[in-house]
Amino acid sequence: QVQLGESGGGSVQAGGSLRLSCAASGRTFSWYAMGWFRQAPGKEREFVAAISRSGSTTHYADSVKGRFTISRDNAKNTLYLEMNSLKPEDTAVYYCAARTQIILSDQVDGYDYWGQGTQVTVSS
Image (cartoon, rainbow, N blue to C red):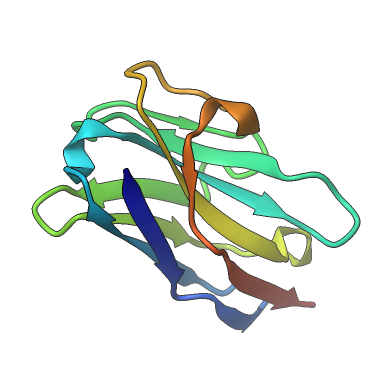
């Protein structure tokens, strides 16, 4: 199995940027398609972005398309989420997740391993 740990969260004003990282350990990172999800207080966990094993294919939620970029460095066993033009509605705990199947998924139950999450707070 793989262990995941997020970092890079924090507080930022609207319009600002943050870069989240997700460090993986355990089994070979490149075996897993990866995703980012977020959960705001009182809301269900929702899909943000996903990336294929090689990094050649990505998929985004409509709410973040054009503002967020998912990427990965398999040599460093690390997943990234570059977040620009942040809005107050982006405030949430952000989670990275790993999926053993090849096809990308935007479903919470499509992922097998999860990190502990990192808080992102965007103030207006």
